[in-house]
Image (cartoon, rainbow, N blue to C red; front, top):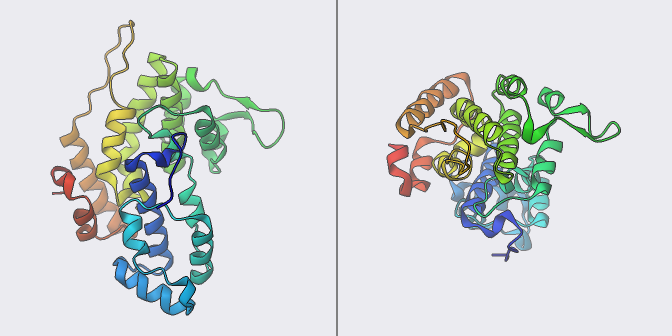
Length: 268
């Protein structure tokens, strides 16, 4: 396993597990829904036909937190003739979930990665269309937060998480509270419509509970949101059933339960 610097989100095992599992999902979906790591081994090794490209055991290691190197991502994508492995590997979102503080670069990269209509709520002038003009970001308005939350997609979750983390880093209570509140509102729906996040949703809950939803210690008086985990778990189970009926290709429950055994309270 490659060593990661302390500046890298992958320095933390939980982040490696989240990212590695997301890459695994991308491979499984691109391969047509082969969810057993041994089936993926056989399928891809048979397809590439080269001894030097034998990746047996790679997919099991991904689920355990091995971050695939870029050249391996490129080879697997070439073998599959598709997939966005590098996108999920390098998603700046992972940097927002680290426990020992984030960096402005992770926030900037997250906001600049947004391609859907959510981006219109981030920039007064798009960053790639001229002068960089951010919305207020750490001091963003509740109206902007609400407008973004209505999309209930991955871009919305990423944006609100970036704003929440930036506000927390600067110890700015109100926007931190408001962004945290609305990440909570869209969390279950968004995660259950994003297979790459759903596979490790119990661990993702832990990261949000500790890094986004936890109390911000300031001298100001504000009723901080209280996260009722039982209610959140019920919401996720409900949204999961709906998503599967809608045809969202979520990882099998058996797999999710097996790899999240330490979070049995969440997965039962």
